[in-house]
Length: 447
Image (cartoon, rainbow, N blue to C red; front, side, top):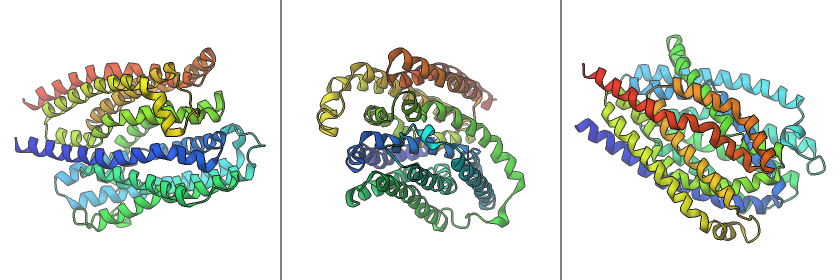
């Protein structure tokens, strides 16, 4: 009973931390859109910037799932109070990730020099000089490669049940960007794009550097910092086995969730990316109310599984499934006030709200909340089979379905609708099979 109370207490504290810290980050991200508009002057240039970030951030997903593998394995060492094992897991992960990052960097620079960036980002040569576009893309790319290694610290934070700290990193990143937009003067298109590229590199990586120092020089994990001497071949396969599965799930989810800007830009025009972002930030920010509370659940589920506390996992799963329904109701109620909110936020006449778009985004937001609920439980249990099958199916049909729906509707909203349709099978079937699996595991643990 004490363990259950401690588990609940720790989860609740992390949820509160997520609301306070990540909530602040979300507020800042909403403020950033009008700030970006003022800085870049033109919606098309801002659309290009969002597309660059969206496309290049795909690179993070090709980390072989090493960070996620560490997240699932490290709790075992910490639960056994084995610092040597913890140091070996951490050292092995950092060394492998650094090697992967170097390979991606070298290959990426070669590829970026060879491909037609105008075609990739659907940029007209009259809007932006090619060399300036290339420079911006390479700067952002290098920053993301550095982030791949530094971001391992978030897996450690999740493993030690300090998910609120992960949200603090996001808050610091958005604060750095916001302060920069407030103090740096806007110039010409090329200068603004390159300046924002450097700001993005600094904002994304400085918080990770600070947090890494705090983790390894603090009391809780002092002496577990990465070291070449503690690289362990026996842990490579352990980390890879879970990591590769999680990487594949990241990749297929990325196709469905992180290619919208790219598809909208290429199927229609970059300027519609800004309109998409306006709806996205409002509806996804509202959906984050539930998703924020899920931040500590993955690691808490892993810990509960180690303790064979399956009843607690089932209860927390059902609670969050219920909250998903309330989230949908809340978003529907928000639609009548959407135009009023857009006018205050971005200015009258900038975005004309369409009810059909709003309804599709409400459905999309709830689908992604359900996905967060299902994957937080499934990944925490290392239960990947169902997710792999159905999310791979979603990834396969998403792009062609987007193209078809954009052509039918003659509008970019077809991309968002396609993501809802593609993900729906997994989100509906997962709760049924996962709850059934938990019941079986609970019975087996009592034998």
